[in-house]
Length: 307
Length: 81
Image 1 (cartoon, each protein chain N blue to C red):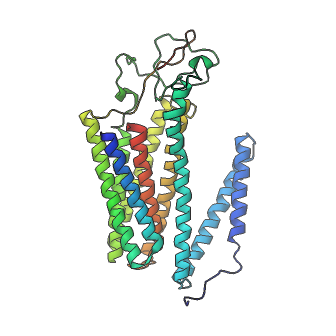
Image 2 (image 1 turned 90 degrees about the horizontal axis):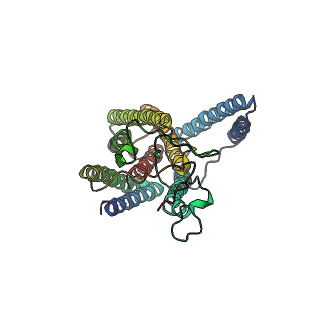
Image 3 (image 1 turned 180 degrees about the vertical axis):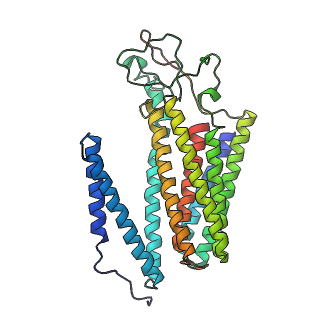
């Protein structure tokens, strides 16, 4: 196509199918939340329609690209589209990190009576201004009736006198391992990127497989950590810490899942020979997304577990 | 001190990521080069940060993030500092 023409697909039905899929998904989800019997089935149907739309629509775009229907102008619009998507992602995580800082540095100390002393613990005598994963109860302590906050169980023999911070949260275990895994995936992806730019297809495939495997391993360990944390009583309802912990790490895990699926699609496209050293925007978009998800985890590791 | 250095490295990582994004939006040979180089910088800084944090934790310069307090009890509401 010439530089002047802009390829516009005519008669496409995918946006309508996508709208039907997403609407069905949310109607099902809302009803599921309200305990309606058919909620889950409608949700599954909506998800299936949405996935079908993604396969169809994205597949069509890939075919149009490989058939040479796109020019530089279309390429530019794809790049800008990706950048706006990234902007929304950055704002999404900025909101949750903002909530973390606000709760930890401002609202919890205020509610505990710091600074202005407008709020005091007498406001609600079951309130405990703390930023913690584990609260310590003296043996035989009876919780105030009506207390809705749930606190994690304390390991046997551990009391507030002999506890060290490491007893409360252990960043040397799974969190450190998971950080190392994600960082390694960033390194392997960079090697894949280098191999792509140098035109070494077999190397790209090897490094991409390693990246995906590291991402899947991360998710496996994250599931393990969740089951440990949940068994120890850290839940969404465990105060503001539990809420922010699961919101941040949960959405991050979801993004790693999406990233791993996108990398798998890119792997398939590399095998099909869709990219060359000079023309590989699909790879660049997904690579940047993976690096971003990696940096989000690094921020989580440093701010949630350490600083 | 470790905290300050860690925050500076995190800001540098975000800048590298941002430069990579600009390279991606720009496209072409120069954009692609810019993107790749800045992502190499971002990966290197991330590994450096991880080593710094773990080493500082090992040396005891920083301690894992936790504040322990007593949980609410039935009779005496406690005032925390």
